[in-house]
Image (cartoon, rainbow, N blue to C red; front, side, top):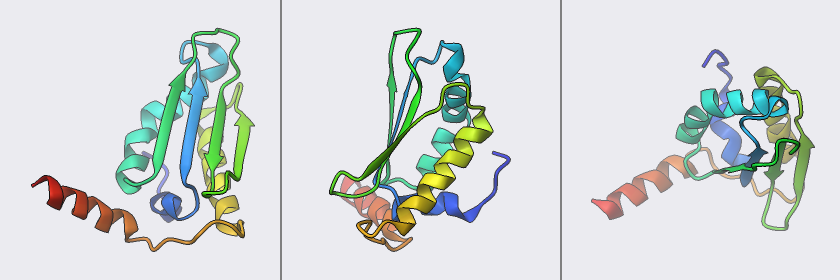
Amino acid sequence: PSHTMPWRAKLSQSVREFRFLLNPRAPQSAGLSQFITNNYQFFKTLNPSLNFLVREYPDATFKPMVEAEYDDFGEETSVDVSGFSEKQVFDLIKEMHEAGLKSPTTKPREPLDDIVGERLVKAYKD
């Protein structure tokens, strides 16, 4: 990916879950669809404990949404991304990350939580 910012590796410190809701064949979902195709694996690799849920809807008029859940108390943000470009979706993810860092109910997590957690899971599988 062409965007190289350290915040991408810290998403799990600010957001508990991202949900991407779209009809990938609808023109209003093109930017979100491109974002998922080009960035999902990279973000997931950097933040293995963070939930990235992709939900597809067959309705051609469905408005694509990006939702971020910040904490265990249900605080979340939902944004209609109809007509957004891939870069606009990328920028929105960064804004949601920054909002999560400022949220008084978001519990800060150590950056190594994901790495340690991944190693523990691997150790139990071996």
